[in-house]
Amino acid sequence: MEIIHVSGLKFEADYPFGMELYKQNIEEFIVYFQTEKGFGTTSSGTSLVEEMFRFLKRSLKIIIPAFFISMSIGTLFGMLLF
Image 1 (tube, one colour):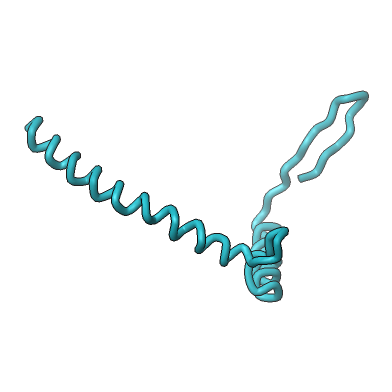
Image 2 (cartoon, one colour; image 1 turned 120 degrees about the vertical axis):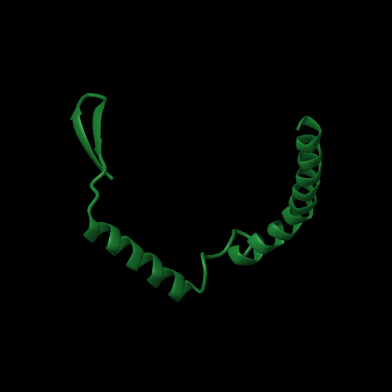
């Protein structure tokens, strides 16, 4: 993003986009991911991937049963309406 000061408190923002810039950003992300062995660490020192898996396990305990309950009730309700 490029920010240009026009006058006083007036600014203009420009978001340049091109395939070369896009390719460069992807390459920089891949290099960072390979050198850092992940997305980095949290303030407590644990890696973000470990934190993600911890919260993913918690969330799946709710998401999976909710999915099956909604599919069952939805199917039964659809059959009833038909």
